[in-house]
Image 1 (spheres, rainbow, N blue to C red):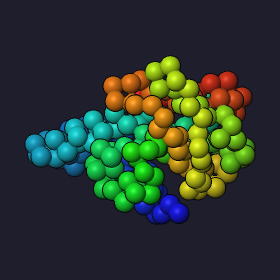
Image 2: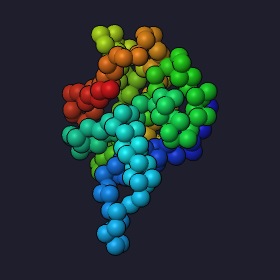
Image 3: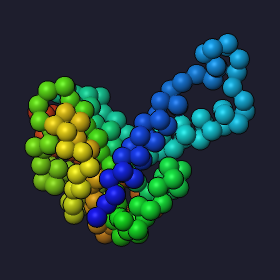
Image 4: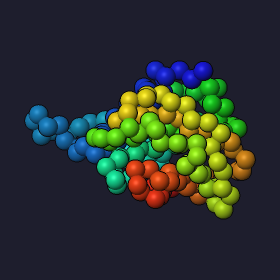
Length: 172
């Protein structure tokens, strides 16, 4: 079974990466610039976020964040235990978090509505592991069998018919 605290920590790490990438390069208390080491760390975090994290525009009152979980991402996030949990050699794994102010997002049939396209090959998910069943802030891990080589390929994750939006597309 997947360790929920590890995945939740990865989600928090991802959020921290995104927020750090959005901040300026000055210390707000006295206007001094941050050290080169700190600036380099922020740049690395921003690069990780740009490579692995995708958001939609919050259409239909639902914001979706998707993180493509890879060995490189896990190394940066310090979550290498998940390599064994999800066998990333045989699976393509995404952590998905949704936020809404009304409605019950836990009723969304992820296994029926999610599709991964690798170049022109369409793959249906093998499983959906729920990490948080909060109706307004559900989070889970979506696992696809890696039936195709993905090195250098275009990955496109589609979530169809989520809160009356026909298609939400996330591309890597």
